[in-house]
Amino acid sequence: KNEVEQSPQNLTAQEGEFITINCSYSVGISALHWLQQHPGGGIVSLFMLSSGKKKHGRLIATINIQEKHSSLHITASHPRDSAVYICAVNPSKFVSYNTDKLIFGTGTRLQVFP
Amino acid sequence: KAGVTQTPRYLIKTRGQQVTLSCSPISGHRSVSWYQQTPGQGLQFLFEYFSETQRNKGNFPGRFSGRQFSNSRSEMNVSTLELGDSALYLCASSLAGRSPLHFGNGTRLTVT
Image 1 (spheres, each protein chain N blue to C red):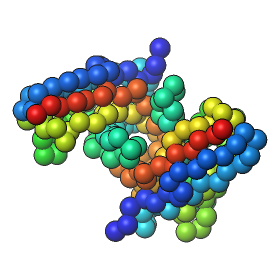
Image 2 (image 1 turned 90 degrees about the vertical axis):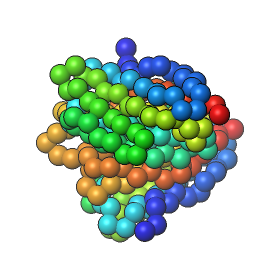
Image 3 (image 1 turned 180 degrees about the vertical axis):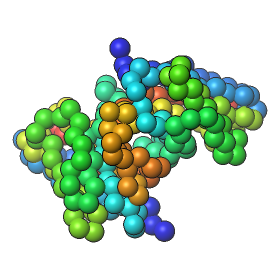
């Protein structure tokens, strides 16, 4: 079983729809990242969070540490949101120092149609 | 501010050869980490450097190595290339670890 699980694996939506991508993890963590990868490979960091909720434009990320679960929401989706969204965690056994070691989920491929 | 720069973008090598990939982090960033992405295994952590010291290493054979220079630039080396080493190799930098990561565009390595 993967230590970081994402659902769904694939998601299609019509422009304007509200989208939710879920991430569950089974290890202790010090932080969780949401990443966006466009065709061609470049990755952009969307959020890094260790508690609560963060918002950036139409994107919202939440995390529930007790339930080991995070969600990424996209409001008013647009075709330019089409990408692979990846959840990744910093495992907490490295909490004694800051680390960029990440365990990755397998990604959610989102396609938004006009 | 310039982003993370990886060179080369594309590389084709034959089995048994070795390869060196380069990563220049964002100015002021001291932590550089490397990741491998393949269709079968997805994204996996390779190693992480901070102030010229390897701080963490992923579960990869010793053929994979790296180093960081005093200006924070990093290189990774893969010796005795195997077909399975074909992948997108991504580098990321951060200020000091466990802070927002900035990724390069990657080096796509094809081993024939």
